[in-house]
Amino acid sequence: MAKKSMIEREKKRERLVKKYAAKRAALKEIINDESKPMEERFRATLKLAELPRNSSATRLHNRCQLTGRPHAYYRKLKVSRIMLRELGSNGQIPGLVKSSW
Image (cartoon, rainbow, N blue to C red; front, side, top):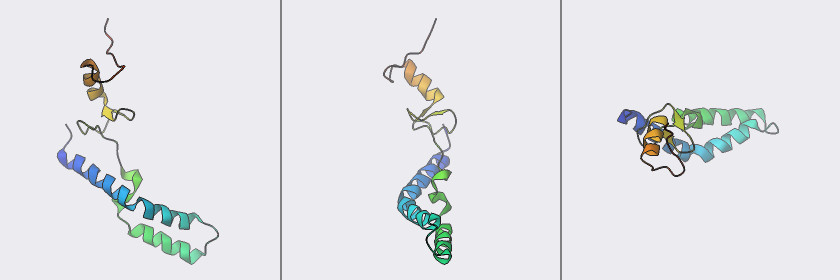
């Protein structure tokens, strides 16, 4: 089980990314628009830099929904390899059977 503080930090980042997504996209659009004057693009760059760092989507890290484990994460199921095996063994994931011979 991951530390509660790390799980909560990741949840906070998710909230911030969601909150500032539209604002960041609008500023990035201005910055990347070559037809805009350089001063306006520079002002947009400064405004983007003023936004919280944790509002950037690149700071998000995938974590297991059940344990919070950050490594060996399966995107499709949103669980770690350990929980995938456990849930598969218990028959809680449809179509998944743990092989044995």
